[in-house]
Length: 203
Image (tube, rainbow, N blue to C red):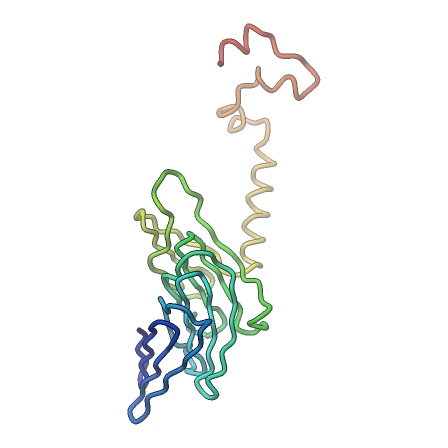
């Protein structure tokens, strides 16, 4: 269920109810599936609904036209919109967060994916999300208790990756590199054979 100033959206199996002061609209479509998460966009032009198999749709509050997108595989746990309406994020039971750009074609759009790596047998399922005040990041809470702060745009992501790679390249073969790598075991990659006695030492 999602609550706005003058509307309430309630998702059920293959249907979505839009309730306002004097109207009740029932949007029925087999492809909606079991609606598991729903939210309104800030300008109240659309309502977004996610289902139990990772599908996400955008529904016009004017014409009730439905546009579908299927990019996640797990149950949609949470949907949030940025305050400026530019980004829509869907958190899934498969551990991913999909970031959609409202200014791009919805049906054909491939979102930016953010996915926490699985470190143990605990499910990385997304539970809750919120955008940062500057709308450059999204904070994501997972089932295992982790909270991660992710950059949401491809520009910020690419800049972050680039900075990380440059930092790693600068530190290659320095104290940090030597701290984690046994140099004796890397000799074969520089044209030298590893001494069998050294290899045995680290087995």
